[in-house]
Structures are given as structure tokens and as C-alpha cells.
Image (cartoon, rainbow, N blue to C red; front, side, top):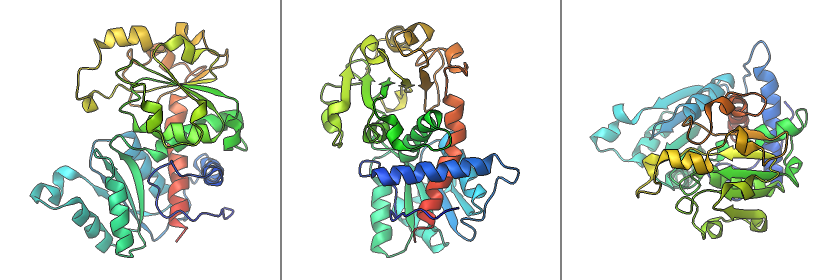
Length: 329
């Protein structure tokens, strides 16, 4: 694989990602997607390195995707399970990280329900001059960088399969619909999609999209970010629609009358897609509440749905990210 300049040691957030870094990820992921479609499906890019998957909250897609990505790169893997770890005996998260450091971990992939945990571990690893790279696999209501990047790759690959690059988003209208208030996926996607030149429209009930939400986004392109509390204006002539899961486990208040009413007002179905461009595509980061955020038949329709592509692309993108930070040392 051609060497691509990359100096970032940790991947915590997309807030400060540059256009060159986005394109480096897209180009590298495209190469690894070709590898995954080949007969061998494996390269020795991280042979001898240790990737520790430290997931402090439940995950299926992200954890499995990172594990498979590391295996495809020939890395050794340490998997962490909170229920069977020394956390149950009072060990701190930082001490757990130091334990994996002592075992020789080179990259730690960290998912936690509290915002800031991956950053704090990265700061501690830097303080120790360990050389370990930290990858944020989702922290609280903060960021989910790899999901934002795989969504970006899915869209850009559709626009140009052979040469996906972020400038392909320029002039595209993209709608994000759903539980935006509690979504770290939305925050990462806002950063990446606006950086590419897209016009971004957010739609949700006022309880899930406060009027001051845009001011919480640290982004220099906020003039292309629009908020809607009704669905039709957000979908009008949209090129892509991303619908988000209602994160009931993170809702501390009673924010919705009922799931049925939510689907009637904000659920994505064939009828609602008539507001969009004829060739509109639909995305969802998963897991999906069928019949709530999106109708079941639309979710399974390959003419419109990119959901299975997102899952497939997730392995290639996470291979790219592990490769880039693993070879930046």
C-alpha cells in the first residue's frame, strides 16, 4: 500500500480533523475494501502489534467490526469484558488501561458511556510516554469518530467508487433525522459532512433537538447547518437521509408521547421519501428499531437503503484507521 502522510497519534474526535486527514482515511479504506473482496482478505500491516478492545458498554457492530479489522491486519487482540474484569473488584479504568499497557498493547480501542474517558486515558498514556494510541469507539454524548468516518466513506464511495474523496459532498443536501440530542453519531457526522461542503439539515421533535443545539457544535461551517422541528422541510430535495435510533437508555426525561406518534411524525418510509431527490439513499448507524425510525420494508430495500453497506464498509474503514495510527509511530 502507498504510504500516506499521517501524524495523528490518537483519534478522539472529528472536531479537529483536516480535509487531508479525511481523504487519507477514504483512500486507505478504499484500498482495504479491495483487500476484503480478495481471496486472502488479510494483510500483515499490524503484525506484531497488540490491539486492546476495551468496551465498557454494550456493542455489537462496533466491537465486532474493530475486532475483525484488527484480525485482517494480522494484529494480536485483547478483548475486555467489564463483567469479568477487575473493575468488579474496585479497579479504576486508568489502572485497567495501565494493565493492558504492561501487557504490551500498542492501540487501545475504548468505548464508554461517559464523555471524556478515552481522552483522559490518552492524556495518561502520553504522560507515561507509552507510545500507545487511543481510539475513541464512542464516549457518552460526545463523539463516535469511526461511525462518522464509515458513513462518510459509504456516501463518498457511492458518489465515486474508485476515488472517494470528501469534496464529493459539496452541494449535496443531507438530512439527519431522529434522536440528535443524545447521538454521538450525529455529532461526528455533523463535523465530517460539513467539512466536505454538504448542506446539513437536522430534524427532530423539539425535545430531541433544542433550539440552541447548533451553538454546541464546534464547527467553522455552521452556516450550512439547519434545524427543523418538522420533517418535510428537512427532506425537501435531500440527496441522503440518515435516520438515528431513539436512545431510550440515555433519555433521563419523558421526551416523547409514544413511539407510534414519533413514527407518524418523524419515521422514514416510502411516502416521506417523495419529498427527496428521486435517487435518494437512506442510512442508519444501527441498531435499528424497525417500524419506529424507519419502516421495515424500506430498511430492507437495496434500491434506497445503504444500511448493509454501512456495516460492510465499517470493517474497511476501521482497518484504515488502525493501520494509519498503527504506522504513525
